[in-house]
Image 1 (spheres, rainbow over the protein chains, first blue to last red):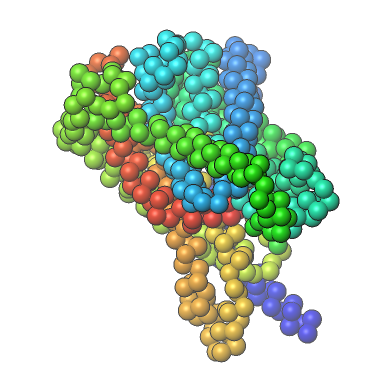
Image 2 (cartoon, rainbow over the protein chains, first blue to last red):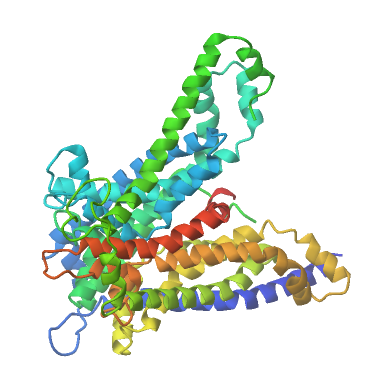
Length: 294
Length: 294
């Protein structure tokens, strides 16, 4: 019996290797190789003419405490700030939406279609649309009776980026949380009711704790996504007025100005930053994302 | 669900609860209106703006004074650059989705069905790949494709797009495949099918909806991509719609052609919104499959 199991297992292992090979090979080629190439490129200079020279960690020093440290840290702070605000708001709006949709008896399908629409539309199109609505004589100013120059100053420009991102992504958070709500067994509420728990107590003692795993996953996804934010500020302001994120700064230098060496250093730093944040988050929440399935 | 004996006892003949139910209904209706406005009002504005003429474009009236299709004629006629962009998007998204799905089906089968060592590691790698910051790949890949003279061609967009399309496809498919009735495969094997035969004849038909859903999700994600697209395409030759809309140029630098951008936006969004309407149940299942279980 145990011999048969071992043979079966070995066979499974062999076929698994064969079945996974194309995927792993392609991932190594399109992610692993470029990542290593970037590290290598980041050690070379960006001469206006001639061959790049080996400069060691000069590009990193320039970004972290050298001549361009101001721009790098300001982009890092902008990215971090956007991430905190955007994820917090999306969680609040998304939770409200999910709780509302969960208690609906009729119109649930309609509500789900509605919230899917902002998710499904390209961020680029959504940004162009909001850019139009945020224009000086646009509909947002007309409705609020204000004359805000939305992209003309730091505060409004940042607010506009946040509004667009939250509008587009809160529905996604809502759908994840709604799926989480649907896994909470109804008997738990009945039991809490029998024990005399009121609506608020049922919410804080049953709903929220039971929703914690789905929330942790949603927040992790959103943090990692917000840290690489590019589309909205690239189109709305092209980074003007304090909206340059790390991805946008790197893209502008590496591709816009073709400074491959320095750009590679920035892209490697961005990767490291996101990696560390993800690791810290998983450690802190104990979120079992991949390990939970067998 | 919770309308058990507890709920009905409380509402017997009591006028207060009838009033309470009325309020509740009003709240629900109000919530639905809010949700609809949140999700659809910006699209309403996109459609209305796209139908305004040049005289009317700055008006904030809820309906166009003299509806015209001039913006659509400008976008879809003329030198037809936008039609080219639509074709580019269709080709890039289809090829990327097809390649990703072919590899992902076998990988997901292995991950969901076979027992082998290092499975958690592979799943973790796939998830980290899905969360990988695009900018860290775009910089080195831009250098590679420049060296090969491939910037502004389809491969320069399809290859980087695989870096997120493939992990997404593997992840979503695996979470679907885990729930398939695999006992049927064994039954077919006992009845004399080989394992590949059993997979083709028994499992593939049951798995088809999962594959279909994953295809939609991956296609939409690639279709909506902007960072890779804006970095790897220079001219109309390879620019997909997201880039084409953002770069749509007016007669002068300071006169953004918002009317045309809105018309182009409507053209891009209508097919996506239709797909969402028809397949909303499946799309939501796919979106949340990887996140909630586990």
